[in-house]
Image (cartoon, rainbow, N blue to C red; front, side, top):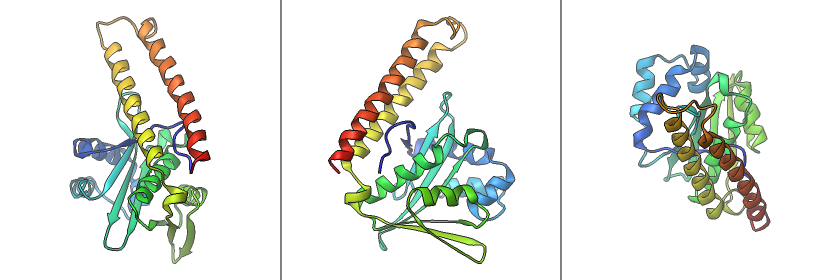
Length: 224
């Protein structure tokens, strides 16, 4: 299963808690309902984010050029059952670019590498985007009484790869550093971003990273 080219997915840590909250609070009411399976207010979102145990669970994100999170996945890990439950969301304006699928793939890769045996996703039956992503990623989808249960039996040899995950983390780190550099160059008082030579260098570096990632993915696929 390929996760490298196209989208840099960052592993989030407790310092990103406020960023996760801001992403979820930006979601329109209907998107919140589809993400959580019920209508949810700002206070409840704050409580949900505060309650995420980032020492036990894992969270992944896709960031915009300004480093704001535009996509977030929460992978709740239950070591007693060997199962992982995934919930994810993407800003409405950023959909259709593969971010949701990349988040799902990254979660599957991580869970498989940590020895979890199954991944679950639950959503409402009208959440057609999530159902499409689940089927695209090979999850078995069962619709019953207005709800969807999607699950994937994890096999480390098929869904994992320590090298692949390490490369994904490195690509995400470089992507973050490049975005930070762009923001610094675009600060007021510096040359216009349109004429600053460094901006073109950053764009060239990003294209180079994408080409390297595609080449690496081909090598990883041949050896997994």
